[in-house]
Length: 431
Ligand SMILES: C[S@@+](CC[C@H](N)C(=O)[O-])C[C@H]1O[C@@H](n2cnc3c(N)ncnc32)[C@H](O)[C@@H]1O
Image (cartoon, rainbow, N blue to C red; front, side, top):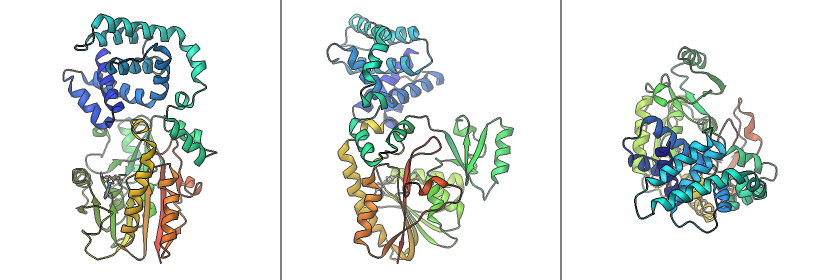
């Protein structure tokens, strides 16, 4: 266990210094090439768990420290161990002993005996006084919900009736949801295929099938042949709402890694242009399309500029704009700690450039679907309201997907729940 603790402590340390977990974890794993697949899996679970509950674990650690700890490796190792003691099934004394062993493996300059004694004393103190601290921490929202205070405050103002459920949903483990290409196989046939592989699953609506337990992608029947993709249920609404019909010219702006690109093409034979400013991420779109045996024109360009545009208007535009990603924190647990309050305004400013620029490329009568995976209003309806004020040729249409009843609840704001991530959808039509 101590190797997994060490890897997780390194990954968490990097995230707390500002790096994405998707970059930090592989790098932390690469420093332990001899780690077994089981140790690597455990390290990933510990990294995600520690960051999911960082507000809480950090609050406990602050109670336990008499003075600030200057060695951040020991600090994050303690966070990982406290996370295990609070949320993991592992035996408490094994967790403590392994953490003491892990700290003894650190290279200089930390004196080993001092570090081992400190880790041992802090964790044993935690076990003795956990209930006393818990009563104290129950009064602080950062420890209770494990989000930054500015985030909690913003949701309280913007969602007086839902803020707690949004915070709680963001700390859950996401389900593994598949999107079935119903042009290739019916939902019933695919469910039978899963039964034959002993994979428990159920159909939740549209093309979405949720697995009772996550499975490695290479073990999902039909994944490599493009029969199914992995995609959140809420994200699967985008292609439905876009309402593209065969033969239409469609622009998928900000398309990478291409989750929605594939779905648009699975639903209708359209002429699709998929663009993203990140050429590296466009490569992933190509890989996804190849797996799905689908085609699109890929363009590396800035959605806030029109220098790449050939002058032929699009009938449909999907604008899946860059955003804080505050609606998908259950999958990207690092976002809660990487984002700053000022980022909300920065993303809103980028979106305010992209949306009017894409609007110029839309045909008369055409529809643009504005999408974010954020729960913050500044990026969502407030952004759309400002756009509507400046664009009299635009009107916002009601949203409807027959099998998905939550959609109209908050005017296109999908509240994160156990079934889906948080998204915002606004469908705009040009007069
Ligand atoms: C929310 S992600 C898109 C997810 C994608 N639509 C999917 O379903 O898989 C936002 C994307 O916007 C891209 N992006 C950010 N700024 C951009 C810009 N100015 N122009 C075009 N793409 C941009 C990012 O590279 C990123 O891939």
